[in-house]
Image 1 (cartoon, rainbow, N blue to C red):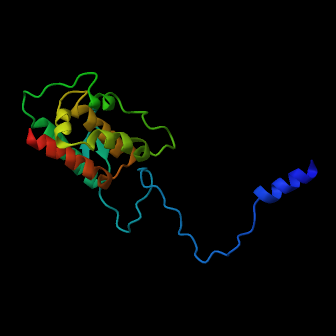
Image 2: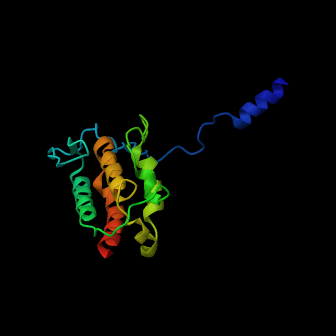
Image 3: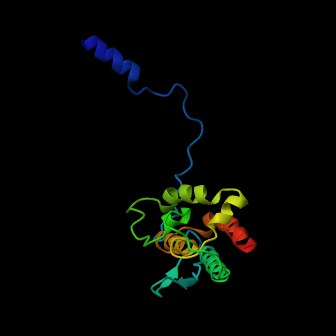
Length: 173
């Protein structure tokens, strides 16, 4: 029995590398998705702000705030005939109060990038169905994205492609 254990240890136990490493690994990438982290630039950037539903100032990445302001203006400029989203609409999953949708210590972008891609990486004809208003429509999506930017520090560069796809569909209406 002991011989079997010794053989198993020899086979599966740690071994010294056969060839010493010739390259050192770069330092680990630090997450940038949390707003509490200090920026790595030497000159602080004065962050623009917008307001959320409670009229409190919202701070975040200037590009993200600019995209969300543009998004809100496009929603407000939609024609009056645009229908409200129903409870079974794909955007309805982003409605309601987003507080708590990201658990403590969880990376907000890792959690929500996939669902946003699933929603927005479709053909232009399929994206046309996303142009609906109301809490379960574009308004709810706007509030959700504003929450991610202001509370979890999502950067505008991460949202830019998704927003451009959405803007192109809204502009066609």
